Image 1: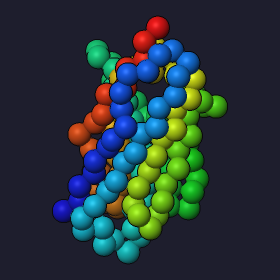
Image 2: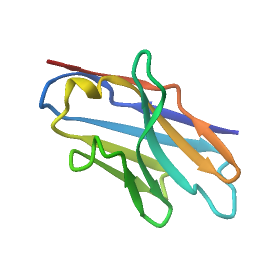
Image 3: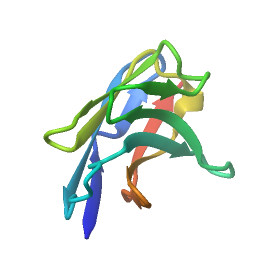
Image 4: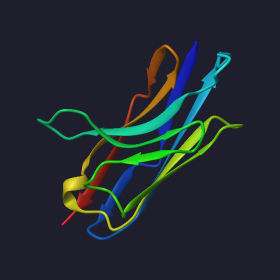
Length: 118
């Protein structure tokens, strides 16, 4: 069984920064390891959307809305992924979820709230 846990959310002012962390623990014994680690977010009344993802090889993908402001990094040995969020905007307010893909399964964390005040 794999457990995914996020940390680091909170309240920040417009233009501020926050860093989110995610750790995957448990039976991570796939020959391919963790294929993708990523961050998604869901605001009230909206669908969950991809924010940033990073593959085991280090290739990164970002939503257009966060490109240039957010940076994703992972540690393959520790099975952790971080999301550095700079120049935060009120529209970034959402619950942020960490997702881990250990082929062929997806594992989600419970989420952490990020609130950006205007």
